[in-house]
Image 1 (cartoon, rainbow, N blue to C red):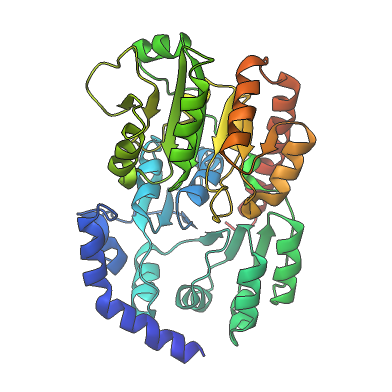
Image 2: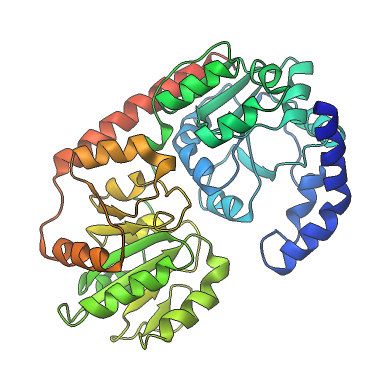
Length: 413
């Protein structure tokens, strides 16, 4: 079966230039840096020790920002290489002004390209985040005797069944020196897949970057927001923006100065979203617009990456997308750190254990439809902010988890 995989991935390599060209046209690839996926690197490898983190997209990369901050201060490490597969994740990482950290796009998982990647970067340790398992890369890492960690590992039941059906999966998972699962379910699955060493240190998504409060919105925008009743819909997917816009339309008669902030998960959809919202006769302002925001603006549409936290400071309530549609939800912890209560749909399988804790301390509520959303937002706009004790509890959990993961990784450097 491994032979079949290698044949298929080489066929993918043949059509990859065409696929990437189409993605460039759709603004889903970097027009200059896409060549990194074929091992034409845009950074030179510095002398000295290099540690390498790889995560698929935005969520995985954001989860390791606190770790990157700690390793940036480690004098024994010269370079921190971060790879990912998506344009959005590279843009998010660029918002952080790291000195040692460089980003490259992950290469296609062919035998030739993965060998070339490892020969060039020569990492002291390879750290894969959550569920990033690439057979050729992993096997070539083993050949070079590079320690390998599966960090904040997450294996769903669906992916577990898929891996169990693949004949070489046990051989693959045994290569990891250690796996650090983010929940008990993943621990069971990893053990069944043949992982030798497993430690549960907690979900890294509880940890918090030190840079949380350093970036602010422009003063005139802060002043504008302070005069409004605000709620936010974040990481929304298709259909969820319209649901939130309809909720705003129902609530504006009660709250005359109501402002709804919508932050789509994928800003490539921004023109379509703006058109849909305007069809409801709602006044829309986009964040990147150079025009002055009007007093009668009703929907503030965020069309930039990496600024979500700035908006959480101005609201008590956040509807978190990817949860009405069957996507599995998005990470709710970023919003709760700012004292926001999270409203979510029924589909949050990606964050089951986190939501159990948030529900226990009354920081999240499940809704199933637009009418329930309207009712919940209505109540939240009236009530006081959440208790600082709840927020501090989450912060303490995050500090402990971050320290444990940092110390564990240091053992392999």
